[in-house]
Image 1 (cartoon, rainbow, N blue to C red):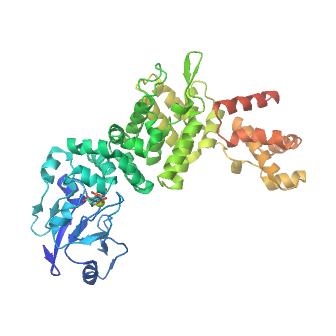
Image 2: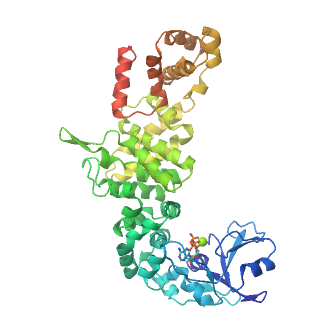
Image 3: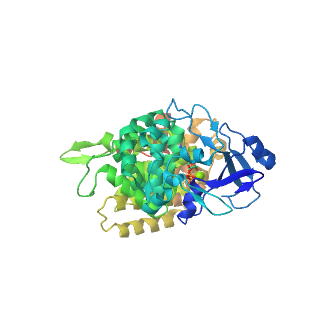
Length: 471
Ligand code: ATP
Ligand code: MG
C-alpha cells in the first residue's frame, strides 16, 4: 500500500500472530520513508533511537495499538561483536528488510490495502508445519546476533513449535557465542520463556541445545542429580521443570513460576549421604541465594526477586504438615508475609506435583489451607502487638535503642505461640522479665521470629529455648 507517497507494510511478529489466530501484542510497520519523513507525516510521534524506529501515537485505547512502531526498511549490516550491527543501513526495498529478520515465520509482510502477503522465505509453509527456521544460513545468522538462538527457543515455547533440524544443529554448535550477549537481553527472553505456556519444554530444549549451560549454568547443575527415590520419581532438573510446568498450567504468577524453577537449585551443592540416606540440609536457604543472584544478574525487578527469595526460603516448612501447629503456621506467615502465603501454597502444590509421586497429600494440603485461614487474622508482626516501643520506654524508663527492637521481637515470639498473649497486661509483665536479660540472649530469642532458619540454626534455637525452659 502507498500512503503519503511511501510504501507501507505490516511486518514481523504481528503478521505471524494474526495468521496463527492469536491477538498481536504490538503492530510493526515497515516503510521506504526515512525517520524524518515519517515524523513529518505524523506530528504526534517520537524518535529516540539509532535504528530508525519512529513511535506513532495512534490515539487508540487498545494497548497493542496505542503506539505503532514505524521503521524504515533496513539491510543487514556487519556484526563484528556477535550482538550489535556495526551500523544501521536503511534500504529502499522491502526484500532487504525481510532478509534481515531472524526466522521465516517472522519474515512475512502484509500489504494492509490488498491483504497480499510477501513470503520470500516460505514462512507460510513453516507456520503450517509449526517450525522455527532461520532466514538464510543459520550459522551466519547466529554469528551475527547470538541472541537469536535463545529467541528460537523462546518462540518454540511460546508457540509450541519445533526448531527445524538444521537450525537446531546450528544452535547446538554455536551455543557458546551467546556469551557475547548482555545479561539484560538474555533476561528478557528467559522471562518470556517462563511466562509462556510451555516453559518446561523451552528450558529442556535450551538444555539440550547447550544454551542453558552458557546462560544459566546454575540451572544446568541440577541435571542428573538424583534424589530420594521414595519421594521422588525424577532427578532434580526434571522435578524442577515439572514443578514449573504445573505453575504454568495453573497460570500461577511469574514469582511462583520462578520459585518453582529455582526452589531446589541448591540441592546439587548441599547433597550429602547420612546413614545411607540422601540429605539436602539448608538447600532452601542456599537456593534462595542462587535465585537472588541469578535473577539480579538477569536484571529482574527488585520486588520480583525479593518475593521469589522468600518463597524459596520458606518452601520446606511444608514438609512436616503432619505435625504442624497453629503457632507454626503463624510463624510461617510471619516469615513469608501475609500477602505471599497463598503464593507459597501454590509453590507447594507445584513442588508436590513435580515429584511425580503425589501421595495422600491433597488432604494434608487442605488441612494446611484451612489452618492458614484460621490464623491469618492473628497478630503476626511487631506492628500488630498491643504494645510499642514508646510504651516500653515510658513504662520502664529505658533509653531508646536496639534493645527495644529485641524486646518487641521477643514479645512477638510469645504472641506467635499464643495470640491470647497479645494483651497489654501480659506484654508489660513479660517485658519486665525480658529487660533483665543481657543483649545477646535477648536478641537470640527474638531472632526466631525475624529470620527463616536452616535446619542447623533451628536446632540451635531449640537448644537455647530449652535452656530457658521455653517449649
Ligand atoms: P513478540 O510477540 O514477543 O513481540 P515479535 O516477533 O514481535 O514477538 P519482537 O522482538 O517484537 O518479536 O521483534 C519484532 C520483529 O523484529 C520480529 O518478528 C523479527 O522479524 C524482527 N527481529 C526482532 N529481533 C530480531 C533479531 N535479533 N534478529 C533479527 N530479527 C529480529
Ligand atoms: Mg513484537
